[in-house]
Image (tube, rainbow, N blue to C red; front, side, top):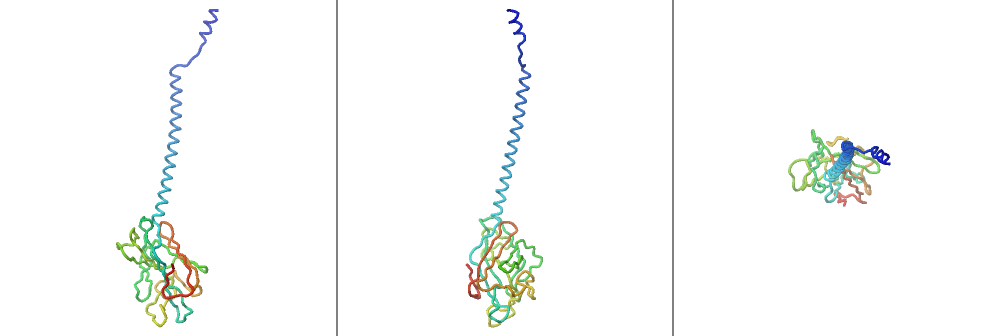
Length: 241
């Protein structure tokens, strides 16, 4: 019996301290790699989320917002009353939420003499203005800008500034004077200074009850859509609220 007990005792097995250490080290290494992977993925996702948020904020902060009314000006391309139409539209815009400056370098200027608008030589304009109605789309119409009120004398619309955008659909010839109101408007490709971009024919010009949309597309930020319908009678100057 004593030999049997002694034999069983001699066959018992165990693990050494070195084996235990190796196993623990393996567990620690695997856990460390897993933790690093999880943390790296979380940091990467957080950075991407932050970039998305900041991109959205930049988009909003670089946007335009309208200030006040939209004004339409009547003109005539001949001496008959049936030729009444709109030759320019003005609106005032400001910087949305006091955000980033918006580049409003204009492709044209206007001085109220001879023929307006006048092309700006070498102007690298960033904002595109388009016009659309049920009959046509003009993808890049002439426009000019003036700065009522506070102005720091550059072409950037900064917080606190206001810009008056004038969209030209016809050239205005100030040398033509007669009894009709604002007579002397010329088609954009009919010898005026404005060149192409506005109305090139009198087939689908703006008339009474016509609905149109002007879209301002700055270099960055959201576009600004101005949609209006003309009244049942065209006056010389119309406030289209």
